[in-house]
Amino acid sequence: MNAADIEIMAYAAKHDYVVLTHDLDFSAILAATQGIKPSVVQIRSDNLSPAAIGEPLIAAVQQMTPELVAGALLTVDPGRTRLHLLPLRSNKS
Image (cartoon, rainbow, N blue to C red; front, side, top):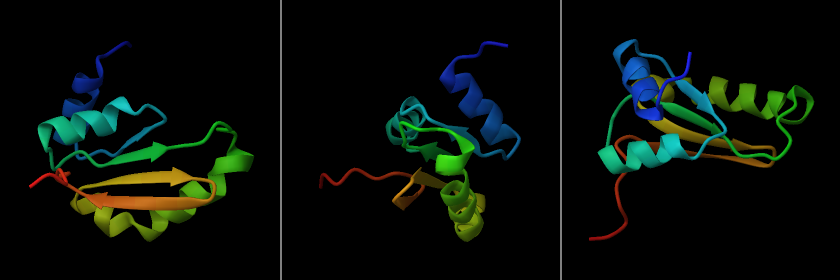
């Protein structure tokens, strides 16, 4: 099944799913829409093998589960994680 990113986001929000992706488009959709759901876990690594990213990804999701349930953008790379609560706000005043 091929679906547009916005359709995937709408489906995930409707069913209270979390989107797991390597694609930056999903965080851009959250920013553009200032959406509060679905949560997105974004993997930022050139090496997507389970050996390279699996452990940091699992640890981050387990640690940030309450935030993901509430609505968050979680960015995971092998060296660190970053969490932004939804809706994403611009730094511009």
